[in-house]
Picture 1 (tube, rainbow, N blue to C red):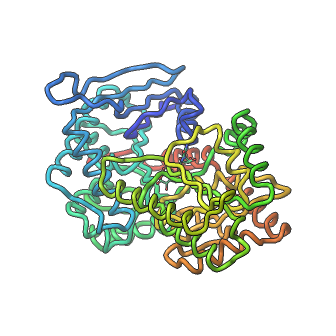
Picture 2 (tube, rainbow, N blue to C red):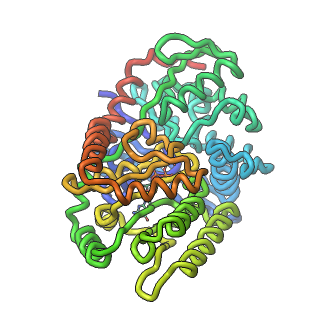
Picture 3 (cartoon, helix red, strand yellow):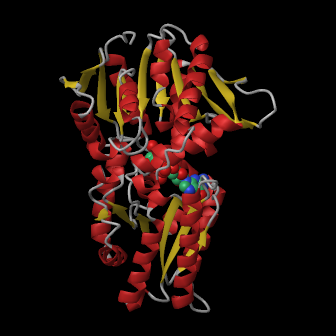
Length: 463
Ligand code: GDG
């Protein structure tokens, strides 16, 4: 069996449950075939200090974890800059927030080259290589230029926008060409795969072949959707933890005569949090029976705080939560419980189980795992209702949720009210279909599917 080599910006520790579904799933695959996981250590070497590019090697069973330190400049241009201030907003359809600042692109190229140079000597001829996410799009072409002929797959965790948006990204020709160094490119949804195909044919003049394959620049690459799933069993197991049970019991007691709604997101502008709160305010305004009753617990975990757009969204959210609580709160009831911190993973199942409704209303999202986690955690005899944005990748698979357009605030408020009032029989029916689907294509099935298709692709030829 070939060894699996996974490369991502950050490396998870497959031995720690806290690392989450993806780390568990990849760790699982790495442990089965023996493997290597390569990425940034999370450590920044400040100017004037030494150690930049230093490799750290650690063993976890038959998995080797190899990480590399980055200089301050590389970190600021490759990671905070090009990855998170240019590609992240542009790929989430937010060109207005994208900053293609000077030095960002060069830093991105430099770090991808550095990753390739450090990784190449560790590779074996029959390795299967799997690169993850937008930070590392050009990694395969850098590896190919060093002579690597192994099979290389890529998975994009974020959306892939339509051709006119891609075409507005400076350097997009180079970025698109970089994809052709892969043998397989995985996207979250059929819509993303469609955008990608149309761009490749229209802008890169690629030839569309059968089975999702494209030919350009002397290479053939296959692109298709692999909607990422969650580890349903692992998550359901977490629900048995004392922390989760305690959270569930406490919340159920506190809200015995009230209705609890939940939102769990990184505090990212793509997640649509201010619009979500406005829809909740509209609910309170339009449906008086929800006052003194409906409470939204919104966990917004801190993320990328050094980027201005993130500081702005935090202020907007905090002022909105304060305004709504000020307008509607009572001595013994506050409509919004907003928490700007990261919850222990072991407590999340308890929160999901206590909530009658989950609000997952991103303006754009690659998939959105919270939607799947909420469904996985419901009590099948009395399940809650998922209100899901049609612009989350998850909406393609989860049609039985109540789908909303998060830009339409009155309609979203109306849908939340419908969710709060949904009869038990309908809740059960919708939940059963959703649960079956997320169980069938869980994170293990996703990983096997991707690696299976990668194995089928023709032997890689040098670019
Ligand atoms: C990217 C794509 C795609 C959230 N708050 C806390 C916490 N979380 C956990 C959730 C969930 C995960 O983080 C978030 O996953 P999402 O899928 O919702 O979103 P991104 O972080 O943006 O992930 C996304 C994903 O990659 C996978 O491909 O679905 O579209 O953007 O698991 O539970 N976990 C803990 N405390 C928190 O406060 N412990």
